[in-house]
Length: 598
Image 1 (cartoon, rainbow, N blue to C red):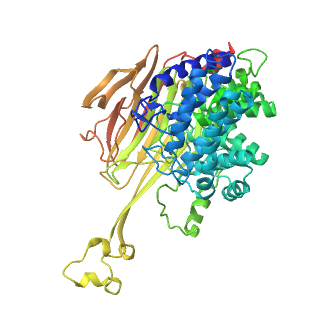
Image 2 (image 1 turned 180 degrees about the horizontal axis):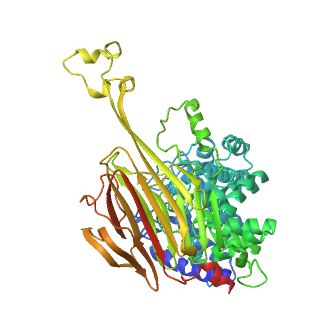
Image 3 (image 1 turned 135 degrees about the horizontal axis):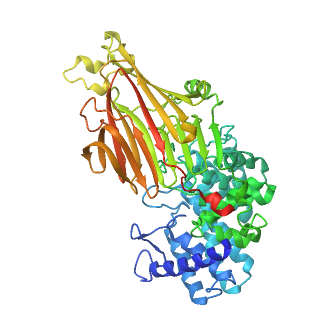
C-alpha cells in the first residue's frame, strides 16, 4: 500500500537527515541539515532544512512511525527551527543560495510547506511541541512583509505566492495577504483551452501550478481556480509514455529532455479525484502513486497531506489497478491545434514591453501545437517551437529527438506550425530569415559618429535599412506506416541553395547502435552515410533507413547535441527532399498502466 510505503520511506529519510544535521554550536549552520550536492545547509523547500523538518515532524506525530513522539528527535527538530530563524533575512525572505537571493517566491514555497507542517503539529496537541511551534509561527509571521510586497520571476511563481498568501491569511488573519493574492489573480490564468501552461514544463512546473492553485482555491475560497487545474490534469493523460516517463521533449524550462515521472502529480490528481469522483483522475492518481519513491519536498510533502486528510491515502478503485484501467493507452491527440496563437503574438507589440524582459523570458512558444500518438508500448510526439520536432518511445528503446540544424542561421531550425495532412499524418514547417543592414542616415547619426571614437553600440541600429533578406524554409511530413509498425519522415528545403544542413537522431544512452555505415564524429556521435541503422535496447529495437553524407561537417555551430546519449546525424545540402523510414520491433514491452491493470 502507498501509505505504508511512504511511512517507511519517510522513516528512512528521518535517519538520513539526522546524519546530515550540523551539531557544532560554533558553526553558522548549527541545527541545519546539509544538502549533499553542495555541502551547505540551506533554507529552501527542495533539498533544504524545511524538507527534513517535514520528514521529522510527520514521524513525530504519526503513530505508524518508529519515531513517534521520540523526544530526542523533537530536540533535533527544535534546533532546525532555530537555524531557519537565524537564516531568515531581516526583510522576512530566504535565499536558496545557488539561484535566487532575498527571493519572495522561494520564501513562498517554504511558507506553504512550513504552514502545513505547523497545522499538522498543532493538531497533535502534544505540549512538548510548543517551543517548536512558537519558532515556526515566528518565522511565518516574519514572512508577511516580503510576501505582500514581493514579486516573482516566472509565471508559476504567481500561483505559489497566492498559495503562500492564503496560508498566512489562515494562520494570521491577514487582510493584506488577501489583497495581494487578489492582485496576482487579477492577471488571469496563463493556460490554453487544451490545458497547456505557459512554461510547457510537464516534468516540473505544470505540477507546481496545479498543486499551488488547488491550495489557493481552498485557502482563499476561490473554487474557480480549480478549473484550469482540471484542464491541465486532463491534458496530462496524453503526455505520459508507456513506461511512466513524462513527455518533456518540448519543455520551456530545465526539465527539457530530462527524465521525469508522474510522482509530482499525485497530490493534484488525488485531491481532485476525491473532490469530483472522476475515474480518469483517480486512475492517474494511482499511476502517480505507483512511482512515488518518497514523501516529497516541503511544499508538496505527500505524507503531511495524508496525515491531514487520510482519504488521500487511497486506493481510488475497489481494487489496486482498477482505477488505472480508466487511463487510455491507445489514442491520437493534437494539443493546441485550434489555439489562435498567432493572434495573441500579434497583440504582443501593444503590450508595451517591446520584447524586453529582465530576469525572466516571454515564453512566446506558449500554446504551440503538439501531437501525441500512443499505441500500447509505442509512444510518439510531434512538436513545434522546440529544437526537436519528433520523438518516439518503443518499449525500452528511446528515440529522444529528431532535429534539423543548418548553417543558414547557425543552429536548430524549430518547426513553427503543424497541421493535419490530407490522407493522414502531419505537416510541420519552420522558417528562418536572415538579412543585412545598410548605413545609418546622416540625420540619424549620434554626435559621437563625428568624433575620433565612434562606438558601435552608440549607433541607432534600429534605424538601418534591411537589405538582401533571405528566407530558409523547412517542411516536414510525418506519417505512420505499415499498420503502425513504422513511421515515415520526409524533410524538404529548397532555397537558398547550398545550405549545409544536418538531420540528427538522438537515442537513449542506455541502448546500443549495432548496424549502419557510420563515421565517428565524437564520443557517442556518428555520421550515418548509408545502410540500415539499428538501435537496440533489451529486446526492443528501432531501425532507420535513409543515411546520407553530402558534406563532411561533424556538427553545426550552435546546435549542441546532448551528452549521455547516442547521436547519429546525416548531412544534407539544399535543395533537399529526404525520406527517412523508421521501423519498430514487434511486440514492444507494455507500460505502467497496463501492468497495474493486470
